[in-house]
Picture 1 (cartoon, rainbow, N blue to C red):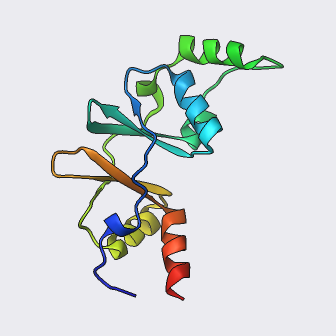
Picture 2: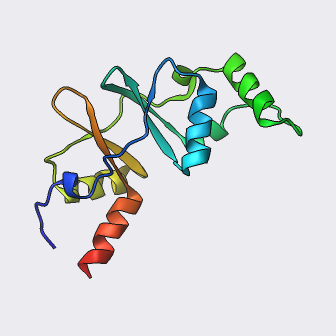
Picture 3: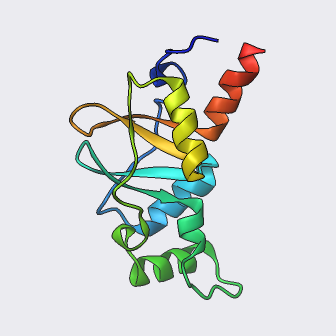
Length: 139
């Protein structure tokens, strides 16, 4: 195992992200359709927040038997991305060591950490699954 290998070696860089002004229903569809649990929120190219599946589950929307169009309309009418996204995120730089990613995820009970460059532009994301894959390849 290489002690100082950078997170850029394990991060996912084909990221599905949203712009902060997009309807929340689009976030929901990206999560469901792509089986994604964390979606970075951008303002242009700059990372401004993240929406997790857990954030979406906190929405108080009564959906008794509603179809997708109705659910989408209800979500978009009642909420926007800014209402539920996490801000002030812990991030990693592409050159930070994988160990730092592991410590950040572990100590904070995170499941995903965005990777940015010096201009806060999203470069990738490191998830607990990325770390598990990396570790399983080491043994």
